[in-house]
Length: 81
Image (cartoon, rainbow, N blue to C red):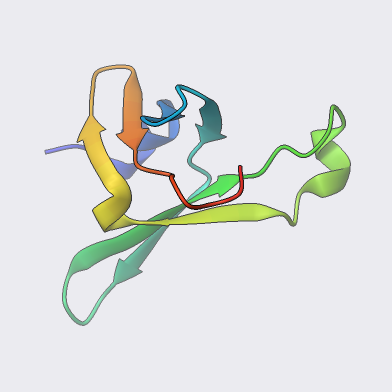
């Protein structure tokens, strides 16, 4: 089992491009079904990420392909990075 706090420390990497998308800032959980629906990653659009806090990437749980020791591999194809 893995803790949500442990997920936040892992880099999220797109398996199609090898690009680092960021780190998880939030997890969406369906309490009625007791399962994780998706993850939220801040989208870095410029050098000054502080000013772009509200821009986020949502990834469904199905797009996560592998959770490793240091990274989370996701299938981000078809989305703007």
